[in-house]
Every structure is written in C-alpha cells, then in structure tokens.
Image (tube, rainbow, N blue to C red):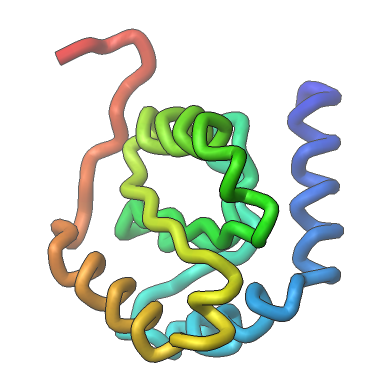
Length: 129
C-alpha cells in the first residue's frame, strides 16, 4: 500500500475515535443499520477525501461542516466534485443543523436515500460518457 494511502487510512481510524459532538450525535442515529436499514460507515476515505459518513452501497456521502466552513465554500465545492467523481451523491449539513434540528437532518437523509437507486455502477477511471 502506498505510504500516502496508509497515512490517510490511519488518519480515518484516529478520527473515528475522536468524533466531534455533532458527529457523535448523528452517528448514534446512523450506526448499525439503525437508519432505514442502510449501512453507514464513519470517516470514510473516498478518492482523496475523508468524508464524515458514507453509505457505500447507496453511494451517499454525508459531510458535516463546522462554523468555520462558511468562508470555505470553494474548498467544499472542490471536495464535493472530487467525491462526486467517485460516483457518490454528497449532502452537507452544518454542525448547528445536527445539534438543533436532528429530525430535519434525518428527514433530508431519508428523502435523499429514497431518491437514489438501490445500486449504482461506479464510474470507471478514464472513461468519459
């Protein structure tokens, strides 16, 4: 395994052990197929990015943005594009959304899952359609 990939995997493992308050709160609802019977994983490496949560078989990535993310819109847009290039749909919530409107966050996730096909083929690198 390349050194960079190994270091990213090590970082994802470390991040799982130190979730933020909003990450822990949302993870409690998503873990162990508790939500819609869908398997979610936390701190997932997708392409070059580590996403907060992902349902790999449904190709859904969930990102939580802290208060400091407001001025980072172009950074977030680039990350979203990289994740989407891997075939994932990305939805974003603020930490405040999770802490003050968890039911609304979960409803948005449920609505997104309902709109996604049960399985999506992964794009193949180098193939353009």
